[in-house]
Image (tube, rainbow, N blue to C red; front, side, top):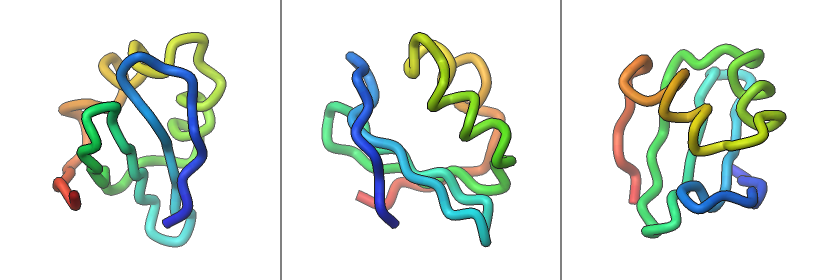
Length: 70
């Protein structure tokens, strides 16, 4: 999945697969996680958020099933 770089102290890059509603996030640590069943609107709001990290913690983390892929 292709990810787009973001300016954040916590997140490094973010990608989204529309067919599977999968959100992929690379953290500054180098870890990559995929979050499943994430609506397109949530991804779009994450990308528009003034703070990507704060939005992730408030609206995505611990709300969707996920797995570490790297």
